Length: 389
Image (cartoon, rainbow, N blue to C red; front, side, top):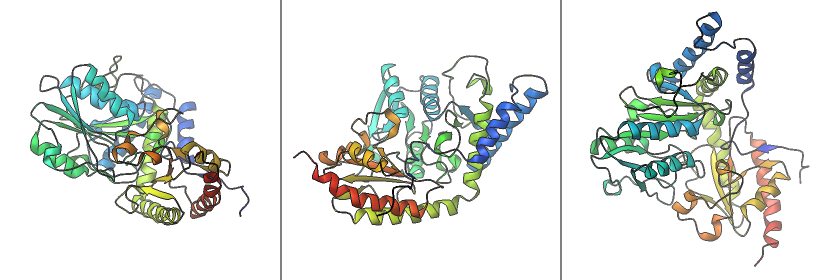
């Protein structure tokens, strides 16, 4: 086979390399335009200009008002601020929340916290492809329901949730109920328009879209009543105190602008590569792909189960050959716990611990994909020989 001198990074759903242009901008702001946006002198005004421009970039892409854009320390804080902030502010109207079985821990654990604060939470089931069910009876929306949170793209299997239908269903049942979307895996792959999809709050993370780590965006419709979860100097209209992370904010906005400049072409190319990969991988014996494999699922995520090979074993065998993947989802910490998503789609028990995730980005090449397929073809039979029966 080939010499093992190729590197194929297929863990882009965990994190992405920063666009060089973004890194240059971040460095320039850190070393030259380093003013505090709250300062009254010229340096402060310069920093304030970066914030204003960043809000305008997001507002233009989402078709919303720049005043509705807030910056946070990342996806986790955006999710927490949306859910805890809106739940606490709307407590008088009700104490009931709804989310799905397959959310990221940033949503799931924020909901658990709210349960400890006296709210009740219902969890929507999903079908075998990871899609929420849209039958009215599945949704326990009442006039006491104040927030529903549904992710756009699932981070483990790439299921794409029917947001527009969900938004319509929520507002039909209770027009006052708020709709939050965790768009951390969908943003940069799809165009999303909160006003059209009746989304009241939307979370985005920088490091999934070739921006810096530790920076996030939260869209909050100006109609939403939301309380801060951080208390301090009242920056960002009092909703998110703390000196703004100007380099990060400019960085996430610049990477967003780059990605959305030719989003259709980028997404089409990702689907082309994904098809080569899924076609190839499904030809291998004892290998299955979880969820949809076509354009009904996200262009950049493929969940692969390999019979009789443990996730970590396959991960390290691929790593030895320069191919980087993840076991389940990298977001929880290093030890892969059994995935709630894989359980929710009814994956057979023996495959739960034999699943790895391949996730692509705008940097992924066909050569890398073909290399990874070749490596899997070579190593899977070898690894299966060593199974403890």
